[in-house]
Structures are given as C-alpha cells and as structure tokens.
Image (cartoon, rainbow, N blue to C red; front, side, top):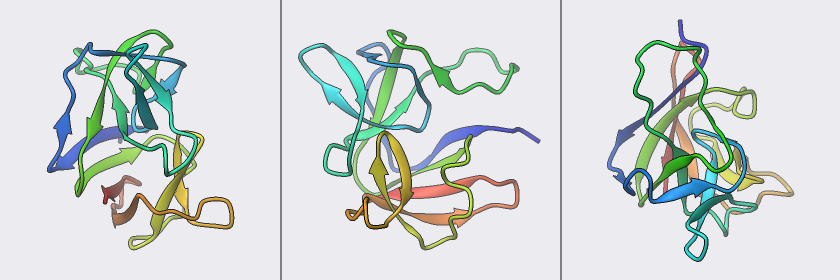
Length: 137
C-alpha cells in the first residue's frame, strides 16, 4: 500500500503547470496563496490567505512515494470552490473524522481550534487506506 497519496477527486480547476514556482519547499496538498508579482506559490499562513492546493505533475509512475516540491521548482495550484482532493502524506490530518471542518495554519490543514477559527473545508471521507478526502468550500 502506498505510504503517501494525493489526487483530485472532483470539480477542480487547475492553473497550468509551470506558471508558478514554489517560494519555499512544500508538499503536494499544502495550502498556498499566489504571489502574482513574483509568480511564486507561498504557504498560506491562515485560512484568510488560502487560495488553493499546491501540486506538481509527476511523470514517473513508480518512485519513492515523495510528494515533495522543492523551492524554485515549477508547480501549479488547484483553485476553485466546492472541489475535493484526497491526501495521505503526513500526520497533520491523522485522527480527523469525516465531518470535521478544517482551516489553514502555516500551509497545513487542521481541525478548527482556538488558533484556527475559519473553516475552508471539511473532511468528507476517511478511507481504510488512511487517505482522507477534503472538500474545499
């Protein structure tokens, strides 16, 4: 079984590959914002800054299951409303159940709490494989 996973599940608009570069090292599925001046994707510090999901096109079908995006690497951003993506690549979503609303803190999605008070989406499915489907509002 794959140790990591990332894919879009439905209703998404993806900005073309190569239009943006990663401002810092990040992981596919991180919450980002666009900097139109520098044409870079930056990690969204809060839910208010959140504009989309970072990803890149991977051309090989077999590999080391790395979803890393290096700083200055060409990448793209998934944007829109009411779309879903599926992720399994880190511990920051572990333990979240279906129905849990999520917000953004320092480029990562997490359950709402005293620090993260604005929801940008919610967990809509949790699969036996450990993958979680998140719908962005």
